[in-house]
Amino acid sequence: MTSDFLTWSTALQARTEIVLEQHLPALASAPQTLHQAMRYAVLEGGKRVRPLLAFAAGEACHADPAQVEIVACAVELIHAYSLVHDDMPCMDDDVLRRGKPTCHVEFGEATALLVGDSLQSLAFELLSSNPLGKTPAQQIAMIKLLAQASGSRGMAGGQAIDLASVGVALTLPELEFMHIHKTGALIRAAVLLGAYCGEPLSEQQHAGLDRYAKCAGLAFQVVDDILDAEAPTATLGKTAGKDAEHNKPTYVSLMGITEAKAFARELHRDALDAVDGFDHGQRLRELADFIVQRSF
Amino acid sequence: MTSDFLTWSTALQARTEIVLEQHLPALASAPQTLHQAMRYAVLEGGKRVRPLLAFAAGEACHADPAQVEIVACAVELIHAYSLVHDDMPCMDDDVLRRGKPTCHVEFGEATALLVGDSLQSLAFELLSSNPLGKTPAQQIAMIKLLAQASGSRGMAGGQAIDLASVGVALTLPELEFMHIHKTGALIRAAVLLGAYCGEPLSEQQHAGLDRYAKCAGLAFQVVDDILDAEAPTATLGKTAGKDAEHNKPTYVSLMGITEAKAFARELHRDALDAVDGFDHGQRLRELADFIVQRSF
Image (cartoon, rainbow over all chains, first blue to last red; front, side):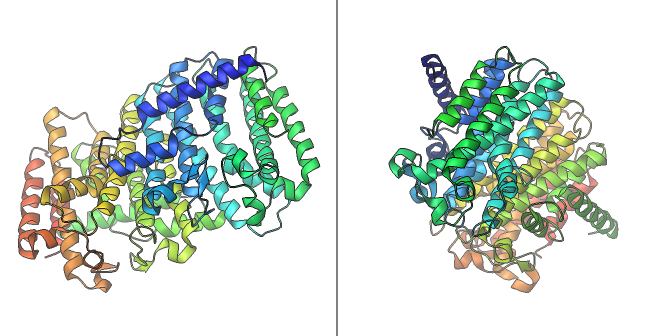
């Protein structure tokens, strides 16, 4: 990882924080507890990987950063809502997230439920309150992309498959199917929405970005599984070893740690190849490095 | 209520059912349990008051019914998601809805959580997958309206205020503030989105529809409180007397039943006055009648 990449990513993480802060409801506006909890769940946390992917894809496609920061934040709001709901007792029942008590631990379950619901609405409010893409028709297509990526045939569907697979002996293709929905759909949305803020894409460029997103998204999940199996809770910022404890199938449990690491490296190479044709694809390539190098 | 209104509303309730059925994910598509639960939560239930309001406003504004049915279903999906989440143990903990076991009773809490999340995404997918309004720019404004009506400064915010007011001695203005958010925002969205599918509105017409929606929405809530206090569970299709049991402030608990009925009649008259200027506002007027006559 170059110092140049660190400067770039740190600046855009900070920019994401500012834009999220601007678009989240003010603490002083009613209902105050809900707004306080929404801000708690979103601000000061996370690596902002999805926003960075949107910014990187935007740079590769010569996009206006003022547009990209809106789609970056909308995707991050969907991600944040999914974490709040995923942590609830009826789902993963987790008490620690990004080094802090989870939203329902801090504010109660009912408020956490409404926080997630409200963050999802806010994501669509953001995408419909600011001009995006080259035309209004393209903006509508972008809203549709995020809606599909979030719903039952995207992220939420992936969580349902995840729930149904606890204690079940999944095959590798079944595990991949789950992750393509659970995390892949939103990562793909981040990359494509960032790109759609820029110049029109050739079919080949579109396919390249799509393949990049698929490989980077899967690599992200494989690395997550490796981290969950290897890293101590303090480093992770969330409770480690939960997957094994919950008897959830992971790449590590199915492949073993050595094979899982080799698979992550293969996905990494594929992601780099996929965006080879972009003259300004440097940040996309560096992000693929970053995603994989978190673990080894 | 005229037999003509009954024919109209029955036909459009049936139409709403068909369009919802078409746009909900197929039972056979993965993840099947989630899709089964989404269909369970939405289909074969409810009076479809919000869709009827959208259709009535559409008729008043000479809208294309093919557009109105999309906004009607999007609003109903938001409403259905809110009921699923509202019934969960951490919220109202209700076991009966529309005469059937609630979604979490039938499918478990985790699935119910994902059902609500997915129905919200589907509402925005619907609004962005079909041409609506006169221009794409207007369509984006319509998406924004629904996002704002659903979020923390709309319906979800109203539910947060509702939660915070259990066992609290609210004043009438505070109770109204809660309901304007909890049910009013979505009813307003139904009326305005139906209208936006039609001819451009004068400022006066817009204000009239807005006032109609506010009065009809509040009347709906006052009547709901009266029904909850008076009707047996079998008639209601949901558990009766829950509000009193949960020590929730209602119009009946604050005003008494006689005053609450008089207030509903006053709101009814105001709603009728507000749409006096619409030559084709007959269905809006009949719906105001219907909302109030449910109870006496």
